Length: 122
Image (cartoon, rainbow, N blue to C red; front, top):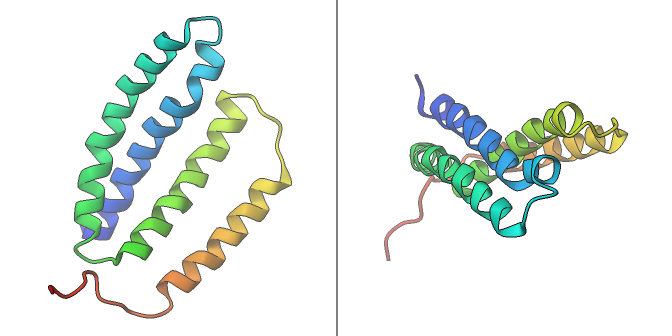
């Protein structure tokens, strides 16, 4: 599998964990002490990092830092919208679509020219 595909796959998994770590406690642990919510979120976030760190290392072999970041942001919104709608039961908002279109513009600008993946050593 190409490095970019591995990067995207790992970042999707990472973002699923990240989104649950950041927001699921609002639905599931609202009546529990804050420290419990923090500890549960940290536990979930551990698995986010287990996927995110290798994803970024693999991606940085073929993508520059800006491209890697914009892929991350697109994936974040792609995971957050279904999470928000289905898990958190939030109503649909057209703002989700407009934000996605803005990110597509950002993708265009980050990928329109080829740039080196890493800076030259000093």
